[in-house]
Length: 418
Image: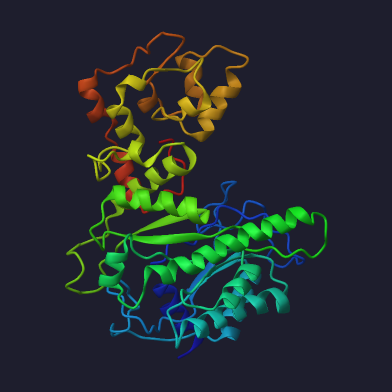
């Protein structure tokens, strides 16, 4: 099999792993080749709005496991191939020199054993860094079951290291991926989190010392498959909250299950549940950046997110006593509770009102989504003229735009001013 055929097979096999975006890295390696800006490397958009790309491939689509939901499961009859270390290194440098990519995302099926697979992946990055001085962004998947020494090596060479948690519960994991175990996944995740924390402490202690190694400076993330198992959205959001707290994750990525296999253990889906994935990303942003708690997003009597409303609008309709929020006196945290006001527009409001009085006309210049926001705010006690009656508010806030975004599979990467 020639190299072009390998690329077609292993790039196609990698497309179901969505956790290849970066929230940015400030790494300053002792090299220039491929070095990226502080905005980092993303699959689609950098922090400064640039559309950038990375080489996203598998080392191999051969796998000793037979997970029901995975396109690369052992029992699938499909073309199989494996890159050599030299082939991936050559591809990465060749694509970079041609300005096709700015970084590498590398994952793999399990070839032989976890240690054998992880060893090859680490060697790819080692050669890129040491032999070619490649300073670009590298996201490396850590293989559950690999030795601690290999996981540590991965963290010292890559910008981000991640372990896929796969499914939202240990029961679903044992049913759909019986060769994997929850503890086997959480163990390397914990080791990576501890190593990142220890490395940061060491760098603070020896600030200014040349040659201090960086351990996964862009942090770690994980991916969860949505729709292949019966867990509720409340269960998923609560799990994500726990993962953020326990392992200091940068991101939890939600991947709508694509029905690529025929298996009696899987639900009969005709297409991936992209709208549900989109709503989970919105809820995740409320958890990480907007100060919401799990019980606020989904109370005990509401196990699943509303497909017709974004989670902040749904919360606002359940809590009318919180509104209207006065734009001229509300705190930053209170402004973030208003549907239609995002992180950037809340900061603009706080800054602008120091020198001027806010009215509806000035409010529009902050970037807030007026269609939503004007139904939940006041201006020094004055209610906006466009305020809708409560009976019509839910229908008005139901967003066809959100459905279109979900169908385009944007996966929550943009701040939609929820």
